[in-house]
Length: 116
Image (cartoon, rainbow, N blue to C red; front, side, top):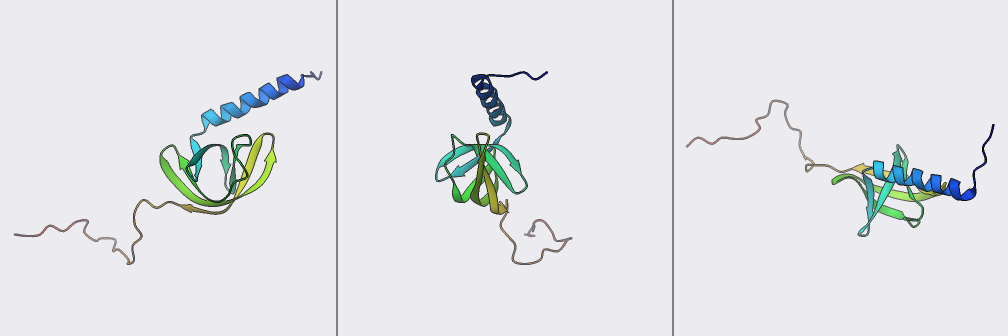
């Protein structure tokens, strides 16, 4: 038996689903001082609520709470079921330390204690 639901009920269910995704995700996107919650993320992209995000393009930062995860180059892919989907052209992980310009030995000392 197939139940027929009105358009208003279907729209309300879809809005509740998107709100649940937004609350469950700690991911957010920052671009030009604006922050957008990320509904879901996959290997090659992510989705943001269509009513919140314009057709973003270019360099953005992806955060998990306060942790800066990636600096990404993105392009808007498609809008589907109230979500604006974006694809990564490049997603570079943010380093927590400066890059070394030499090879560090495995058994190198951590610190130097000078003798007086």
